[in-house]
Amino acid sequence: MTYAEVMERVRSAADVAGRDPVQVTVVAVSKTMSIEDIGDVYDQGHRDFGENRAQELAEKAPELPDDIRWHFVGALQSRKARAVRPVATLLHSMDRRSLANAWLKGPGHPPPVLVQVNVGAEDHKSGLAVPDVAEAVGWMIESGLDVRGLMAIPPIPEHPEDSRRYFEMLRDLRDAVSRDHPSVEELSMGMTDDFEVAIAEGASIIRVGRAIFGPRKATGA
Image (cartoon, one colour):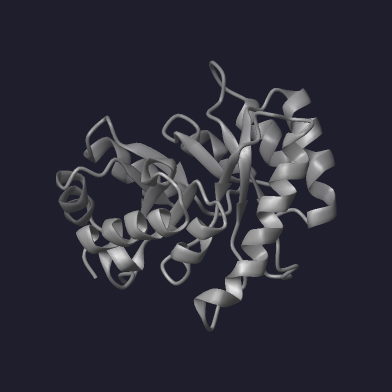
């Protein structure tokens, strides 16, 4: 699949859902990809890119144009927040007090965040349990974080439709939380295998890597 084909599928999925395609931000997840790979997609007009490793983001960002909007989409260790904070436009994986405290440290107001939710209750994944999200959003906002929405990585689907119930869960949770916290609007959900279902269920941000860049590259360097 090419970048142009992905963007056409996004437009088509939005049309079918009765949504304006501009309501869906496509984050091109560029982990393990080279500067040249990212540059090729940038040259096609794309500006939102995602990384999931602090060191990789810190190394790539200075080598690429300043108008790229960097999304940090992976689990982030609190001690590495200071490397990501000056570069990121949006942190997708806020999920605990230690990370919140680290994100708040530094000059100026920190970039906005999304609260990661473990919608599948999977032990190996980061994120807050569904029942804990509303309270966590409250203390995060009180502490000074700019919480813009929720993010989830559902269990790997055998079929795209398998993800729908998790996307519905995240949307319903966002709707409930936003009644008390209107700034919580964004829904970051959907990846290469299921982004069209995510768009149908209200995703405002999708994270697409393999469909845009091809298979992830070995990380030996």
